[in-house]
Image (cartoon, rainbow, N blue to C red; front, side, top):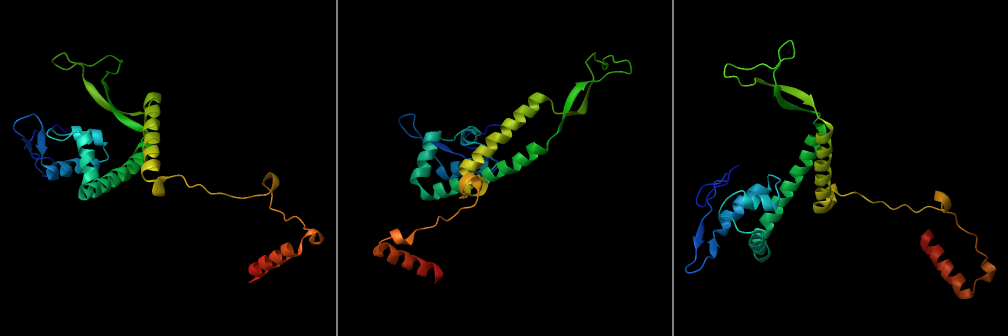
Length: 202
């Protein structure tokens, strides 16, 4: 997607207008239009930096985050758009992991293995399906790991690693109860034990 200049319609149908204050270089933004475009980009799964660079006439990161902090409506919309974008990252993980081949352009060869040229003397190219090479596989693995890390941090309740705690005895065996010599307990300790046993039974 190319950059849109101020006043042009974005893919969302919203207009971005930048009104200059007089005098001075500071700009006054149409917040509603800017937020609509930024959030639409975020919902595509791009980063905030990329979203703010996608069109002309958008505020800086610092300015936009100030809007988010100061305006509850913008904050709510920003959070919702971020969440949608993060869920798209989960879909991308599936797509990336399923990819085993890709289409590439190579020079066409004749039956003797010699390059074929067109009437203008230019190499004739053809598209072939090739298995992923080691460099592409390594890059794909990095893409997947990065998205998994982002999801585990941004949406930990859904995509975070679940941690369970299990209590065991010595060397992972069952827990054993040691025998207690009641003769060495005081009357107060015996009374407390009796109370605990009664609670456990009842």
